[in-house]
Length: 131
Image 1 (cartoon, rainbow, N blue to C red):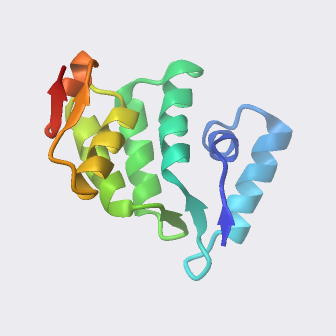
Image 2: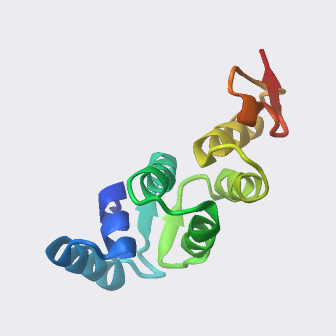
């Protein structure tokens, strides 16, 4: 199994740098297989959404289907896939950042009753409490 860094996923998805995009796509399509998937950890998921939003200006409407496809792709193994799916649904329906959604989902699965925050949008998520 190989781990995939955020920049490799971004190059594969956005195809904005000919040389790097070709290499990223080749690694993902040739080395990530159902029997030996590429690994995407939680940090990479958060960074991916942040980069697509902030650096590329993509809207949530554009990012949601990309995330869903990554989560469903059998050639990829997502760290803590249960928390990732929960975070995806929260992000899809709410106004909070994906990172906040994943943080809350991970904390909830870890046994936390609440996640306390000063973040107004995150405080509206289930399992969060505004300080």
